Image (tube, rainbow, N blue to C red):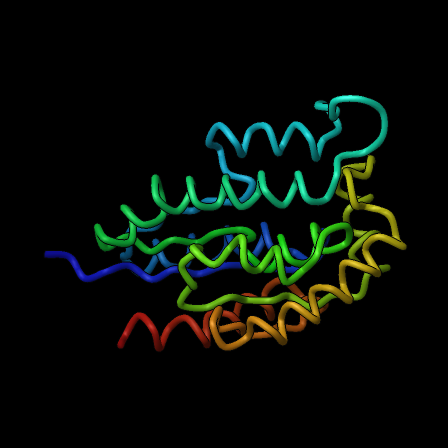
Length: 209
């Protein structure tokens, strides 16, 4: 029977480099001979696809105004459980390492702007904790500059005041969930290669354990 895979998560405000570093870690694990599932939240499942449409402003709520934070929190929690049960857990049980771009901390930070954070944490109590959560800390102004350079047009939550608030909520979530979600904070303003090496220094011992 295959040994159980390891579960790695990347967190940080938009523009922190989570997607880049998740891809780098997946490639590095594959180069080491491991089987890897690279995934992300929102997922590619049915609920995740609806969430992506919301974040890209392609789907509007019933009536006027913006999406309620509680509605988004419920959708993210539903997507996360479906994602874990249908894709992540089976991969881990088959001995495949899973690298996920965003997980519980993102919900607490982003939906925590408009919904009670303790309630959001309770919604996500069924989310299995990762073996390591890498929180890439980046100043909001640096993150926004990166995002605008990459995409040219901001998504939902991608304004400087919102990123500043999300950054504060991430710091709060990181403190509350540090132990359960095994959070490691990385300086996301280092070069991509330096961030990669800092992450690998935490991953390699887990592979040898």
